Amino acid sequence: MKSFFTFFSITFLVYSCQSDASTVQQEENDESSQLTPEPEPEERVLVWSDEFDGTSLDLNNWSFELGDGCPNLCGWGNNELQSYTDSNHRLEDGMLVISANNEAEYTSTRILTKGKQEFTYGRIETRVKVPTGAGLWPAFWALGADIDTVSWPDCGEIDIMEYVGKNPGQIFTSVHTRSSHGNTINTQITPVPGIEEGFHVFAIDWTKDYIDFFLDSNRVYRYAAQTQTLETWPFNKPFFLLINLAIGGNFGGPVASSVQFPKEYFIDYVRVYE
Image (tube, rainbow, N blue to C red; front, side):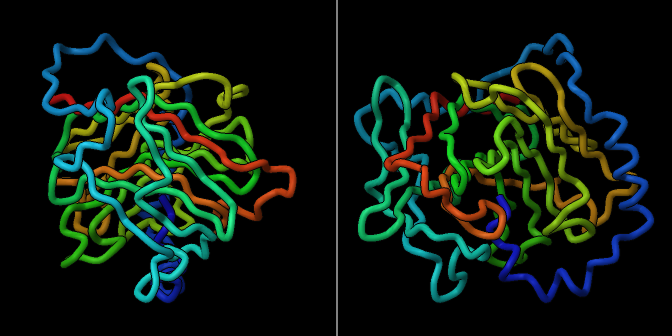
């Protein structure tokens, strides 16, 4: 989720020239970014899940981030338009439903497992149905749990799924590190005609050596640093999960006048296996 980009624009200017190692990394990733069937899974153990079967969000798992990001990160670092609330969601039919509204202002919901459920390595998986319309930006992602002391991008970020409504039929998967962040070279844009129809499963297989990204059991991308340093691989530590539906912003783009609110983002489950 590129919510920190504007806030770190000065950093981007300093690091706009990518290292030779990053260039090599991108060449390696290009070779493994095609849709390929997922290999037969090894036996995995479910270590945590939220099936959203209750009547209210389980606050043992999730917290809300509220407001527009001000004063520290106005527009959530990306000039986004929404203000987050703890009421733009509901649990219904065993699903979490996040609603984007436009009444007096744009509102939505953003939840995270920080300080409650944090993970290092394993398979992290969700099944979702994305909302459609230019200006909508649903995501499922993860941030380094040490972000309060090791600021972004050094904390690391894993974007398991981003959908940008202005670009229908595409899914974005990315990592952000000191060596490649912001308008990162470590982003895979996967064309998936009709991705907006029905539910799809998004997952990562995260090891000490690489992170594989999957869409409906097909691997779409692999990130594996040629040489692991703090700048290229901040992924040997706990991360927490985030789910949100952003509106507008530098990445989400203008909201089309044809978009009729509310718009809803359906999350069937979140599961973590080791």
